[in-house]
Length: 579
Image (cartoon, rainbow, N blue to C red; front, top):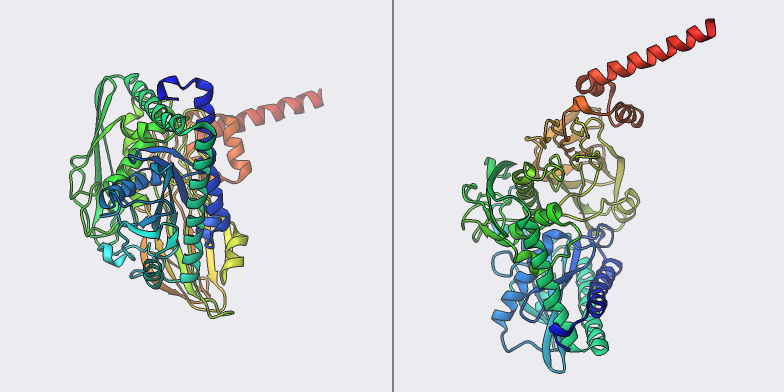
């Protein structure tokens, strides 16, 4: 059966079979991994690519930031190993500059799928490992100034050859990573998912035939491409510009500019980042793959959220990003904190289109990937540990509702770790885990609230490293909405004294008589606060999300009207009782 003969029912069945394959592989990693960052936070993705390296399908819960990385690795794999790819092989890579990755903690695996001796596809997965070596525990600290400091760089190499492990490569990887037992467990989970994916692809071809499966690849990609281009064509022609800045790079440079001009003609869209700042010393730089994933996400979220992520979406637009800039860095640029910059790329894409699509625009979300790393040796066992988490914040207010509170936004799709998981796995105590009142920007529809987590080491001195964005520049609102509150790190001493901490902090010693609070940014509101419904203001007060002072400051008129109406109702009731 060829692509031309594929009937809609068969196409849908095979397409769902592909989606089921990636979802099952995703769950395999989640349930087999050792680290909390994967098994609890689900910081991993799975995809199937065809033999030419086109992305066909991602798992339902995959992370948008991983979208282009797997395609990048497979493209390099095919170039480097042309004619030397065999059944049972598994390839590994992570380097942003030579292996198609976006930062070193994301280790990418790819396994070829052969049917009747011919290459059909690749089953790929990425998992964010809690540590891959380098100058700082967790491999995610601010202030690192070249890729060599950020961890072990892995080019595209063979991890398994025809079903047998390449022991020298595995030994080399594990020797250069802290917590080698945990790393081995997470890698084994990825390997198991690769093998399962290859098996499921074989089952699918056995049931429907190779021609039908290959035809489904072509049809799904082409349909997605046509669907996205049609959505672009529905926009008015024009040029729209937007810009925003990163707080700082952690190495002395502030207000790093990301500039965008979107040029739309017919069904063509060009995202031109010319004018963005040169790449910086600190590790907030982006590779082009990271920018492509960000633009793809933002365009899909605005124009057609239910569209599947695949090569057709990626092919539907063009990007101009001059080499050597913050949005297309060159080696040996440091990139570990690239997710924060990806969030800002999304902010400028959404901003550029806000005037064209006001009903779909939102206030700026927390705009960060606020990360914290607590590390040390467990006093009960003497074994080292690394607790890594990126914590959610506010989602922007929308045209018809408030933004969500305390969630991961945009390019990330991970969970916040439960308190129980942290305290069971690590010698740490979570003293507070709550929403931050008044952190969501006021508006007709309020921005979402940020999160507050307070952590104290138990019975030992640990190290704390933290990275925050939107700590200096608050997330702005749209159409008259107010900005959300910036985030912050604070040190709490035993005597009750508090001290602010830098937004990019590495290796601060933390004794058990002290704690650190992490507050993530809130989000911007949508529309003028003067148009907020009285019932929503009452709910803000009752829920404790907004203080009386906040209500008075931003909703004074509605609040006075509420008080007046309540007073009038009481007076009428009193008159009825008297009469």
